[in-house]
Image (cartoon, rainbow, N blue to C red; front, side, top):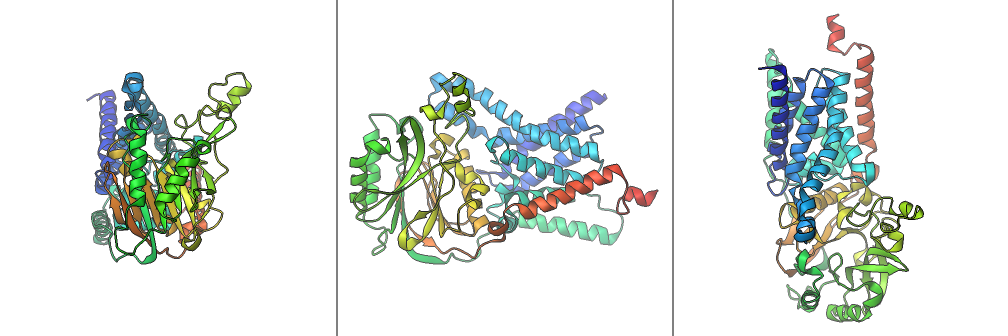
Length: 505
């Protein structure tokens, strides 16, 4: 086989490994296959003689992984297929191919620095934190996201999502390490490998959740995105939510202390919704209602949520601050307006404007809660950015945009990550599901199935003590990352006593 043919074969194998690795994410939830795919990619990296060949392996692995894991990105274009379906494959391939460049650089630079595997642990982890922060970030599909159902996922409370990503990559590197001839080496390496395999297949589900005496009602209308704004069906969905809100308690005596409606739960902007808000409060029978709504302020629009009092008055307002690029606003739209291109300016009503940042909602006896609207639950830093530690988290989302399976379930997994990281319960209400109560260990205490209509009365779990990650955020991970990158660069420049090549010279 010619060198060129061998290189193309390795590239195809990398794409295939990435495709298999995506089976680690929802709806498959097989982290063992994610580990297997990463092990194959690292082995291919080891057989890459030049940095550009290693970069091609990294790009191919990432492209296969993202393409399979993010098929849900086609769904928004299918809401109005006659107008937008033609864009779907270009958007999907462009998104996956563009973000795969982060991993390509990590693989290529790692090979440039060293012919060993261990620097890749740090360069790939660095690429992941850059993917999560640059250009507002898109950390969807991190390796650590696949761990929420198994024991290693509890490590999120200690080192957070990027720290667990580094641990996952390091674990894969262990599987590529030569066993060696000595019995002690063989025993140690195979013992570690066996423990990892067991940890990735044994579900985490130990112990019941400690509950408070407070009950939260989650209202799930199941309005498909193609129907959500249909003038003929608007009334149907609105009245369905009123019916669920006024329904008797699911458990006798457990009257809801809080009622949650989903993101953009009503079709009218806040300044035109006084009558609807009064109806909602009346249906709630005096219980506070927190619901998603669009808000206008002059020419600017906000994706917001409001807390209603007993008479329908707005007690507190929260404006979403981490918006979806190209979905909720056009990047640099306001800058382009100064140059005369006004069609993309959020300040002129063309898209949403960003809120001021994380804020707490005072819910009286329930304590102060941190609201997250849809996409904000993807970012651990948005939760860590709260002005103080909340009593619990609330996510209001409309996952109808994400399709009917893969996307909503992956979004749910990320909500569970935030609960584990903070040691806090999360009340999650989604238009089409999955609406759920998540305990501080990331377990669902109860849930409403995807693509069904209904409501759920569920007890609010008690929070745990502040986690290590909630106290220190990404700083421990960044310290380890900088030490690892520093060692990799230092070893490239001169051989140190702990470098095997030093001992051989």
